[in-house]
Amino acid sequence: LDAFNRSVDNIDEMIQDYMKEVKAIGFKNPQVYPVSAIYAFMLRHSNNLDEDELDELDLIKKRFSKDFYNLPKYVGLESSSDIERTGFIYLEKGIIKQ
Image (tube, one colour):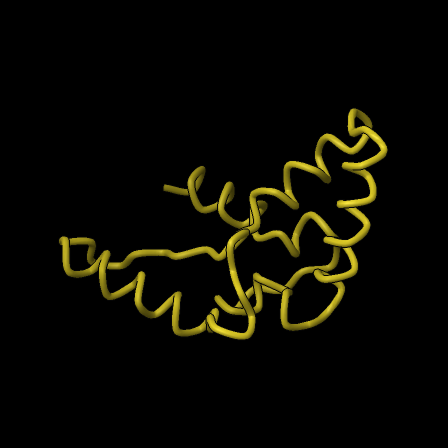
């Protein structure tokens, strides 16, 4: 969802569209996890970011503090930390579970 445009896109609709596409190619019970790769990467590597990147991270944190960008909620999951809000923790757990 790093290229997501809130004024044009809808997260719920995007998830449903991806679910339909994946089912159409034969997956019986697909799991779709909305994620922000940029936010997750920056959080995980925040000790190695330069000043401009840290400024960008602050802007992204502000955006993701809004409930709209709490990505796990769109698939019925809860988050209590910044890294969980990126959705990546749940994607990783879903991959390991498979």
